[in-house]
Length: 265
Image (tube, rainbow, N blue to C red; front, side):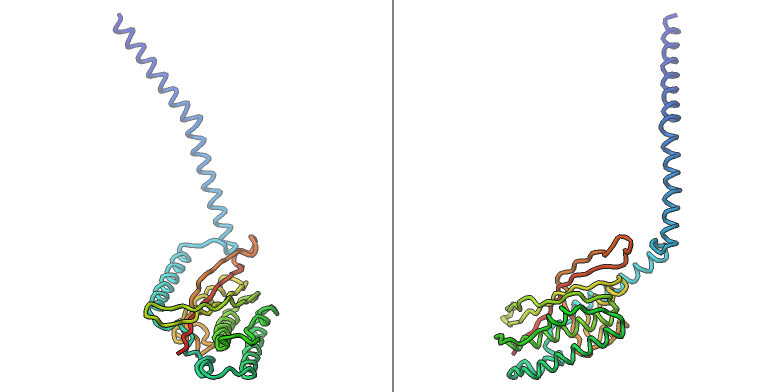
């Protein structure tokens, strides 16, 4: 009899546990499953709406972007191996930096560059703020006046690229102090730096960034606008990107610190 009593108690415990599990299933698990299904349906609807508004990406778009980025990375690696990152061979510099500085020649060349940049910008609807033009190098009795040619050459390359890439607005430009650097083999280089702030769509910023790090030959090979035969590959030392507004995610403001090096024999 005691055995039967123990067995009945055991069966009651098992039944109670089974009932408890069933109640947990009904009260907790099923609502969670239903809520998950509802969230999946809601998420799919959101993704569909985003794709209809061209904010979402399909699998094909993801793969295409992957292939594009992979190709650009291979190109950048090849650029990094090339010894083409100095301004020495820029046509604006080559025969001038070793000669006595001529103010009128410099002023005339700068005015020609300003005229071309403004003309190209007007044709492409690019706005260039007045402070950009005012920030271009100017002779005011500086020592190492030959560096004005290096700064002007760097600005010429960068501004032409920004205009040709179709950025909306070139907002500001400034030249930090030129730094003198001694290499491991005791060669002396001048580090010329340009700080630039621009705004526009990512579709215009991306080719501009590629343009900066390529020389003229690589620009042509990449199918980018070949706008300056003396183009040299530049360094992007700092790069800050901000969205202009939440409702316009493709429009950005970018601040760049662009560098090149110049060696005077």
